[in-house]
Image 1: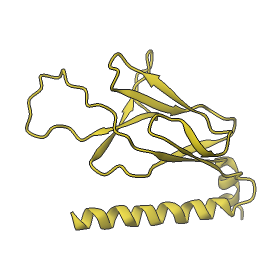
Image 2 (image 1 turned 120 degrees about the vertical axis):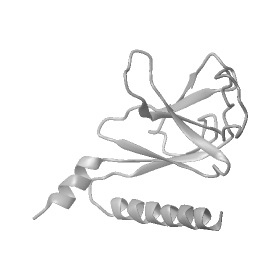
Image 3 (image 1 turned 180 degrees about the vertical axis):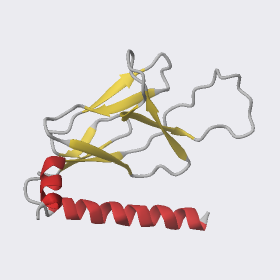
Length: 143
């Protein structure tokens, strides 16, 4: 348990160091926003728009950040302890899309549920950070 917490802390530190690096690269135009578990923005850039995708189960829904020209988005859960992240495959698509996700309670260990159980979403607030990867690659490719 302690090693898991240490790993998470290390990843968080690395993530913020990466964001500080990106922020310093001219042209990346970093934007960010803070959202509640249901996608409602609390604070931050109005350029970031999170959309809720409902499912047949009222307790399960997915979130996605609406595309913004030239931007890539990274989500960062604020308190996902005891949760799992799941990505979805959109209708008509073959592969799961990591840009469509939800956080849910961890699966019920040792319980046989016949495949009928869909864990409800967890109330995980999150931050979304957007940046322009072309500026980053241009910076890293300079000779």
